[in-house]
Length: 160
Image (cartoon, rainbow, N blue to C red; front, side, top):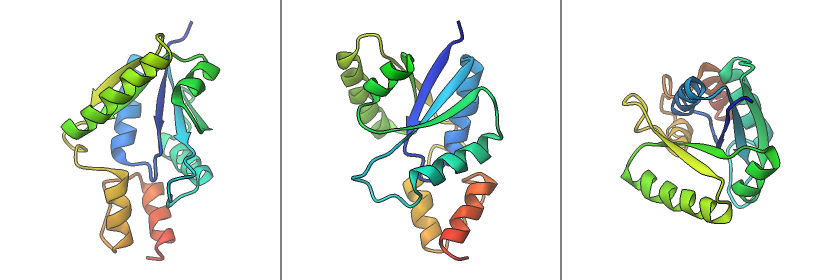
């Protein structure tokens, strides 16, 4: 039976840090279910459909990566998809505190759910989607922080 992990996030936009977690996750698992969160309460730069297309372009059609969208509780989505391992990237201590609470809440909701934390590589520890959006919005160069297709989408979005 293949070992599949669930890598959830908003990915608004996908960054090279996200891709690093995907690539490293694929070294540990037979496949990854990358789940893009639909959060109506968040004012997203890219629609959920655009984010899926951007991720699809960034992972290069790797057949080990499945892309889906979800809303609501992650645990319910994991149960629906029959996946019990959640993969999360950590950049800083502040990430750990939040992710630790989420992992424990998920385990409280479903004792079969395990969360695996991967430390972000030194090249990406300072990258967040929020910072990328803000820098791009203000005309800064985000080359090297995002995949090429995402860079093009950001430039188009901000007409540069």
